[in-house]
Image 1 (cartoon, one colour):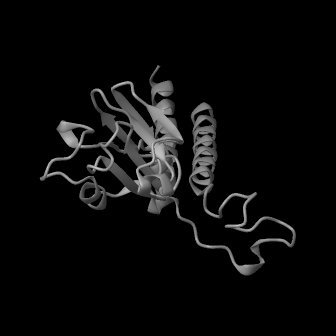
Image 2 (tube, rainbow, N blue to C red):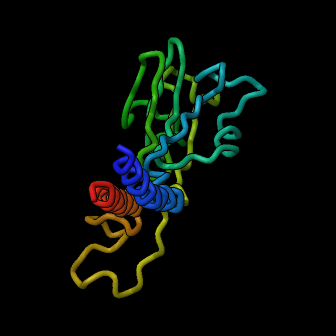
Length: 198
């Protein structure tokens, strides 16, 4: 019985470096960490919720003092009101007639699933004009940014950024990091199992 205990200890000693390698790889991979981490949920209007602002409240000021990233979400809590997602032109004009989306369930969670501007107004008549409107700028998380490709990165006849029909460079960097991390994890576990079974 003593020889098998000694053999198991030495196999365990060989497995620990493989596991340490996996942990170091995950710690050093910011793209993998950002892909796995859930985004923040911002409560619009704080404890007061989504309502016509008073003299001490400004949705514009609130939005300017927060940083929104792809993967975050906005949470609207309200009574006898609604939240309309509108385009920039309808936001400026307080036009509630053709929203992109409308919610009047009393609470609404809007995922910020792309970079750019999201514009919201109240659907109640007169509320937008009284300041119940919000515009937020959503940024790509810095960990997901990739260096811009050189001029030869696009073959003739393929889509280029800003010209439609293609994805922007850098949009798959988090997915690439996950794939690399998953491959490294699988390789380390396989090596560890082989060493353990010998």
